[in-house]
Amino acid sequence: MPYENGPDPSGRIPAGVVPLYDWGCTMWSMIDFRDPDGAMWSNADGGCWPQGISFAQWLVAAMDGELRFAWPDGVPAESEWHRPNTPAGQRET
Image 1: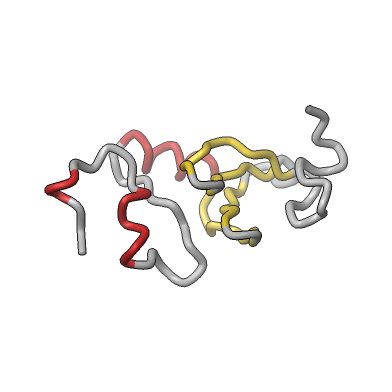
Image 2 (image 1 turned 180 degrees about the vertical axis):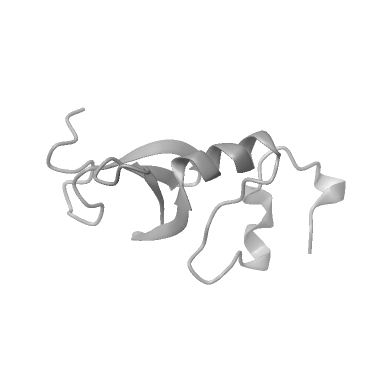
């Protein structure tokens, strides 16, 4: 799939921002190749917003088991199940 015009024909995802990690339920972490630091973006529910971290910071969080989907206003309680590798009995409330 060519990304020079953006991965989303609707134009909601900027050109140069490429889906990197599928969280499921049409939620993605994306990398911004326009930025030399590889700024990370989130995409869900028809919206696209910057995560405020670089690709390197995103990788460190993933390796430390601290990676979470970055909602613009925090994680809604009903979306706790989107956290990967969390046993059902240990989900945060």
